[in-house]
Length: 475
Image (cartoon, rainbow, N blue to C red; front, side, top):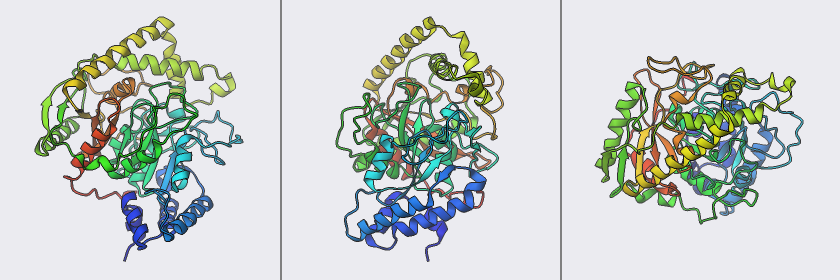
């Protein structure tokens, strides 16, 4: 007998197989997921908006299509959530902020939401985010604290922390997140889930993020196969995004069987300059890299050759935050998360010359990675420098040698944002757990436009690992 708990942790691929052979219906899967949300979400706070009636209507329509043998896509009927930075027609998109008017109007779907509807996904609701996605942990003035199902006293990461918490707690098989400095990969790492920041422009976005051309939209899931299936849907074109890549025929799920045999893989434990990495993370990733050699890849220790990107990224991100939110009227500005206010105030030190210098430095980082990828097909690093830490904080306690301002989340996420600067594909897959049971993520970085290489490598690695026992009892 299949229990509710069994149903809510089925992968999207398995759900599709069960819908096809009629051993399970989209309505049954959706009802089970909604029941799970009702039971678990008050504790975890992964969703800030759930529309039961709309989800069941989506599920009934999907069930009719599957019964006719005419699903709209492989994710037709799969319970899915959308991060609350992404527009969804008829639902408020409040971005974790008290500065946003609930009244809207909310008349538009973002491209990702539109693609989900066209694919027949069952859209459950909106997942939590820190205010405007500004940090790597998920809590906000609007929605409060989101917790990690592996340990509810810890953060699930951010800024797509609601999405990752929902996945780890069985509250939807698929999620759509955003990543402007690691916001897909950080929460994936901290919750044992997976996802990919595809090359910038691969997944159309509208309206574009105020954070500019470091901000990506992408798929999140519990398995690499599911993430690839969702990317096939999200990568379809949308004329509203003038920065989008030329459309291609999506084939990411089909490319998973490629494996890693013959690939040249570089392993960089610290990118050549990162001053602190938790010892358990460093050991787990070093051990995981050897799996790729066992699978037929050539693996070498090599750093990509660019200098510390922290100052570059901080100049970009903090300056734009100040330019965006510093213009709010005083009565609205005071409603911002105090940490976001502190970030804006910190950015007062940057002038136009600093921003122009950043642009030049970013070019050097991009050139270094282009050259590096003539020698290596993939780069492996840790996904984060630390495991999940206490909720309600921007960062964990700083270890000796780290001198960071209290609003700075970049010191513990040094592996993610360099590849927002270069815009290339990067993903996180689980590669183990700390002694205290917290997940550890491994980052796989692919050359420009080569998402299929990262996905195939992640899939091949995951196939060598024991199935994850999701933290039902802890939630």
